[in-house]
Image (cartoon, rainbow, N blue to C red; front, side, top):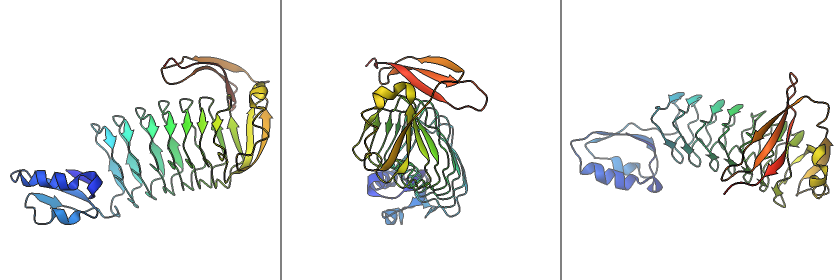
Length: 289
């Protein structure tokens, strides 16, 4: 069975040609696209259609699935319930582009990168669970997710791509983990409800327009004031104002995170008081690679 878009980049022409050589084997195609005409008059191919997924509301993907292809669920407007199995380790670009019915997503633990525009246009997405294996949030990954109010970016993330949260107009306060080493252009562009961005470690490398389209407060740990001093006079093309926040007066539990081949090591200090989410990172060590 083939499930997806009928287009040249998907290799549809090659696939249909191969199936014509196997007339004794039945094939089912579910999808739509510019090369749909190639499926006509092929006796062993049944095209069940897909269009824009108006009738697809619930989807449980098989536990053997390893990856989700580019545009796999492109504009499945009615898709509301989606369970991505833990076996999935890669989700390609635009996989859930404009799936306006999805309200909640749990990204499996094996996924290390959110590809470009992967959830772009999921306008009703309000809850996202990201794994502690994730290292990159790609360009436009959550653009126009206008109902997304909160998101916890795992400590494992080191890179936030260009316009990753563009138009997330319900986001209020976001914690940027100390492992993040690079912020690209306009990561939080048009996040009109943003109150504060909390940086929990040393400053990353900022693109010169990293805060383009953002009006918010930028907060950083007071214990790292000297490291942040060269940035607090910068706007990075946004309307931002800088504050340090105190990390004293808390009961911290210290966790040593060892370096890997790709990521730096550090010490994470997490407040154990009930209801307190304060934490910060320091004592960085170089990656092993």
